[in-house]
Length: 299
Image (cartoon, rainbow, N blue to C red; front, side, top):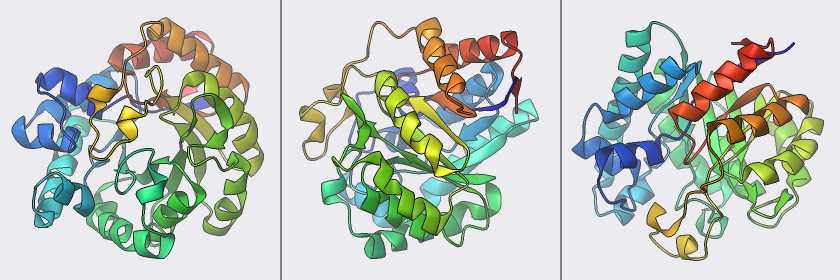
């Protein structure tokens, strides 16, 4: 049996659900401002469910996103501090677990067309890394939608002094292609150049993940996945200043259904698994239960 790292599930969607507020372009950042303590409670719920890694609520904390959301860019350090305090409090409360610093895409999710080129993207990512590296165990680049977008985040993380994991998102109906349309296999060159410790597929339909894993399993490093629970990424969500109200949650992806996908990824060789948007604590608890029942060791 294998040693499996169990990530947490959705932070942003879970925060919005628990707050009862309507989503804004600032997403989970706005909820963290308006409802202190909510993020900590979510981190604790995932630890209680069996997750061994908590991901910081920093996915959408970027200067460009703050500006687009009508807030001052100068708030960035304070917001990063809030995210760190909430995740540290959760870890300390349960007395275990590692912290992964989330590095989300610049501009907007699934929009590599509006992301700056790698040499420009490197600068804001390096700032985030400098603010978090002394208080986290690893960096998790999330939802990279193109080779260029992934490279910008990897360049900005090169002086992290901590492990860096790269997670990319693939097309809803073709797991062998990134959202940009580029083949997933084209990531191989930057993976070799920047040597992230692990490569993952995230925020994609679980059906698409299966095909994507066939590709990244050839990158000669640990790999895995954490899928979303959306029906698909809609054209409406790809408009400027989108909110998650433009997306619909699946009704056929309960905890057991999702856990069965996870088991199939492990059979493909995945050793890092978890959940993304619309995958909550109940899903992670069921994954944990099934992993232990199958004789795997959760690390």
